[in-house]
Length: 249
Image (tube, rainbow, N blue to C red; front, side, top):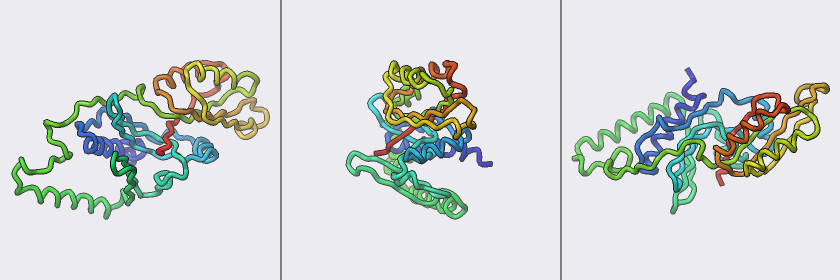
């Protein structure tokens, strides 16, 4: 059953542990926003490539001033980034430290032998501390329980990132102006805009087109409000596709 993989649950398990190790917070899997890849459409993969991006299922955790981000979702990543080129059974972890900068660890994350190797490594680690008294053991998550942080996991509405939007709209004058006005009123700036001709979307007589918008960074709560307003326009013919975007610079 591949559900844990394609719905992001496995990544959320791993991310919750890594967040605890990195930031000294409790393991908070129940607070992790989790979104899988089952809703991805072929045309979004194609449009992303035309714009210089690839779509990857990423787990992202960050320590920011107001708390900790903890989220798993499909993400547009610039195609030149190393993590954008991780394929098949390979996994990658990118960590950014104050002193060390950015470090990438890459290797097999699936299959019988890599899994068995990880399990045996855990058993070896357990056996090494069995004879040590509690006061001299390295804590499981690297922090003594008395020193764990109470930093809150941020709700998705407070996350700041950029976005890929795909809108199926009527191919008529004034539609683009309506949509960009809503974004401007929400203080959301546009980074790039791509329009596909009607013939590519639904045939010569379809009178509809796809608008693909890349935005600059904005708060997700503002984006949700803007999407609700755009979706209510009679010129928008289908549910709006929204995929978050990370430059990982």
